[in-house]
Image (tube, rainbow, N blue to C red; front, side, top):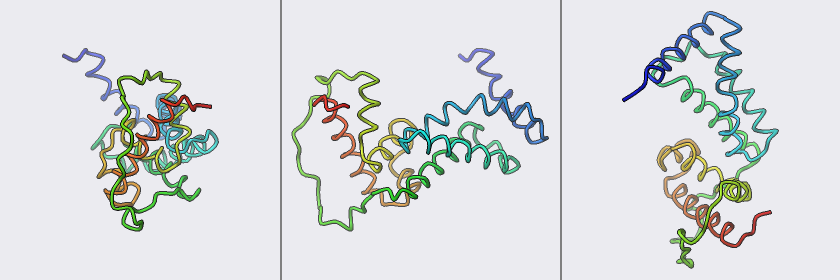
Length: 189
């Protein structure tokens, strides 16, 4: 059962968006304060560079504020803004020529069986995982972040990245294996 505050939160957010649509400067500041940290973290998980994440954050808010009239409340404002941040983060990676190789363009017909890792044996700590994720190549990190942290499924990620579903699935499996290997080997810098 939701508390009164949980029930009123969407209404308060909608009122805040409406204030912004009417040019209320304090409303813009409140929205920025409310969402900036989470959106920065979302971008940072994808671009893995603080400067790029800061740029993405600013561009995303400029775009969101500039197109508030297009926001139709079909989702929450936060979800709408997150989609902008993710798309801008992906575009930032594309500018850096992210390497997502289409599986159909390679001679790889299958993934080789690798030594299985006993995931229960590997004691994960949040800081270790964060460090390991930062060490992943851009393509691996992006797919893993979108799937695990942002909650997108493989089909949605394929659409966002404009690659095949098979490529996303392969990148995810390899990213997961690489991440577990980094953690198990203690190869964190």
